[in-house]
Image 1: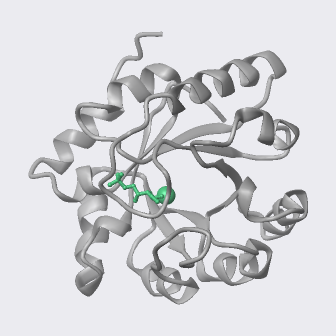
Image 2 (image 1 turned 180 degrees about the vertical axis):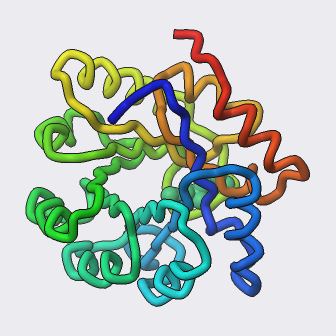
Image 3 (image 1 turned 135 degrees about the horizontal axis):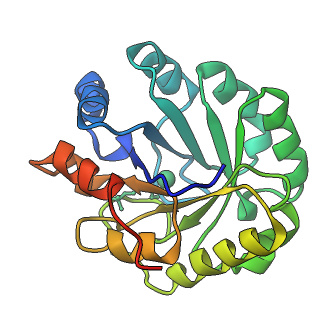
Length: 223
Ligand code: DX5
Ligand code: ZN
């Protein structure tokens, strides 16, 4: 799966929920290929967003790939609902459940992509044993819960490490980065080795969404 292709995934968290179609259309018009959904339960992270109903309401509006990031405890209880709502990938936090392999199996049963993610304080070591089982690893580059935060630079080392493991072991997962990615920070994130960039506030606050996306998609990595 990994290639030199760079994917941009605008996060609807930064869109106006009162006119969500406008946000979806903006992502589509700008040439993004994925839409990122930040699901928060108010317990795993200190914020609450939306549930499967929201994903299923947005589903008929677009053919974009739905990248669902679950920041909730007991994700095993909600995989079914989000898969039926139209998720194309479901990503769960290693910190959110004890039996993460079981959750990944549940996601696979729906024939959609599986993702594992880790907060900034969790080392790559914690996900090492599931890397052969997943389609994507999402490296949080901020502490999850809110958009508009500053990227934590030390998280980029984890992207480098995950890229090295992928090469060494011949794994196929994509590496996604999420949090604090904007026009100033994205080159560092891509140089570290990310394949997919989530962009919330930097995308929805931009006056030049299409050229921003084009610029990122055509970026030539420095290593
Ligand atoms: C943070 C979310 C991110 C967030 C990114 O908890 O997982 O997806 O939307 O927002 P920005 O790009 O504004 O940092
Ligand atoms: Zn996210």
